[in-house]
Length: 269
Image 1 (cartoon, rainbow, N blue to C red):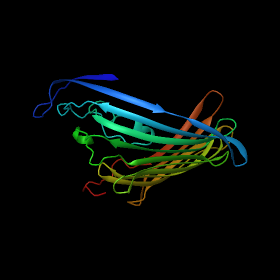
Image 2 (image 1 turned 60 degrees about the vertical axis):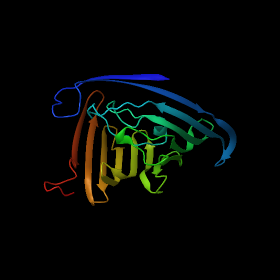
Image 3 (image 1 turned 90 degrees about the vertical axis):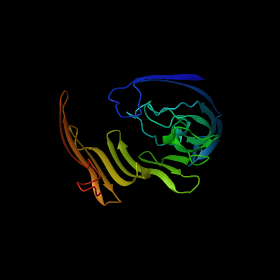
Image 4 (image 1 turned 120 degrees about the horizontal axis):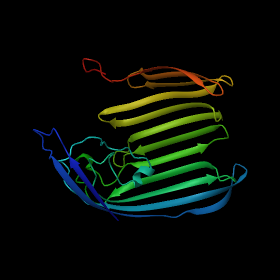
């Protein structure tokens, strides 16, 4: 149980509904628990440990009208499985959402003999027991999107990661990401990725990217990154860097081209 107290002193608020001084006090109660079950199992011919880890959280946060506080550094957060248990809808402190909700989640891992994760699968969802009164975070449904994640160490050099959120009412994908990574060693990396967000501030994000970091010799190293917008069929970021490093000094050359605004002067994308 905790008490959250903030004090704002605001300036330049003429002709607004904001107040010069605002004190906000909220109460919060959180009950969390998890259990870890383990069993020994053979996985790809090796002795491994398989876990099942259900977790539960009840969260209650009281409500207070916050319309007299300006929005300075707060925006809605995107939730992954871990974010479902965070208990806050926003970054920053300008808005603190009221909550009365239950979160359920489960994770299963496969660990090798050295306790390294070979496969991790997670699933979770929030169930709202009452409506959220903070206007910007109001819920129109009884539950959050279903969030799922998968991490897979295919072998010593290849790794895959994916996460997805599916709306509980429409069954539409709200957010997803997929990455496939090749690591030859700690200095050599190639990663192919795709990211998608159905609605981010009124825009749809659908992008594919390629990142690489690779040594040329003992002294020379290069890095690169490229992202492309699949909706608008254009590059949004290109990055290339070259480094020479000696025993006690280094020189880096970097070239970057990126899209700073999705719209042109006429307001078109």
